[in-house]
Image (tube, rainbow, N blue to C red; front, top):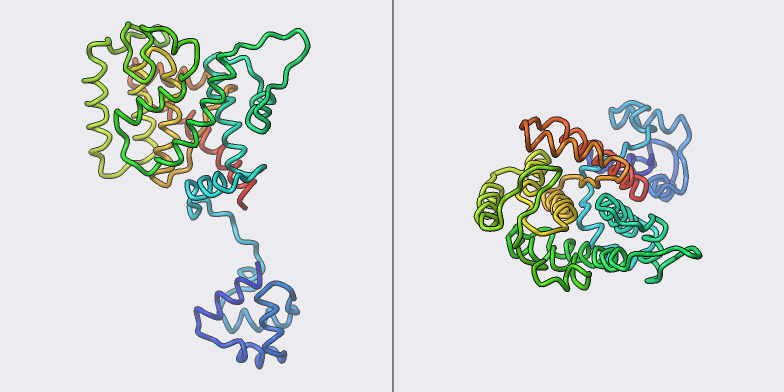
Length: 309
């Protein structure tokens, strides 16, 4: 805003409002209104101000561009969660992430139904439709898990934390009633992902410790290292099920911790995501997955801008 710029440049040059008023031939109260944005100076006054501040008229008049790097996204999400603010970034992120991450794994709930569960704690259904109870339970669980993730997002990533993510996601589901499933613990039975061999149950703990040792020893974490950790976690596939959802939430957490714009993999992009993971894990070609995640990051940046600009 013009008023904010007048105030900024005046303070930078240590000029009093009364001095501005004398230059423009107005009262100090009028200058105060200029800075508050409640009154616009004339074009002649703007010309005088540009000369005084030694900036162009265009610089004074142009709209400030949105700088997402200056936004503490974690702080915003935490604040809106505590406020129980509806219809803003936290609210939208809960719904978008929960719907997409679950739908990628086969949930039958629509985005509208996911929104309805979050907003009303009830399920919107159509006549003669059949709804999988696990889809409802795991949707509610993901909402709680996202809140827990926000609470500990700035903490160091540990095995205990990752296991707690899994426990919270699968608690109360039909899988939790299977003795061999091991909710909140590493898998007991061999599994695979995309036809690829994963870590054997006896090697999972060792592989996870090695992965975390590497990650937590990094002096600097960029989005590339977060994507690398995610791809490595998925090929270990430490849990019997729920690995993708836990892994994507960890990636979101780590982005928040390191002041990086997070990314949400959309269901519509899941084939690109799967292809990227496969290429990373088989041929060590990283570009496809990185591009997919960066595209998802751009999409989330637009969501942030829509709510916070």
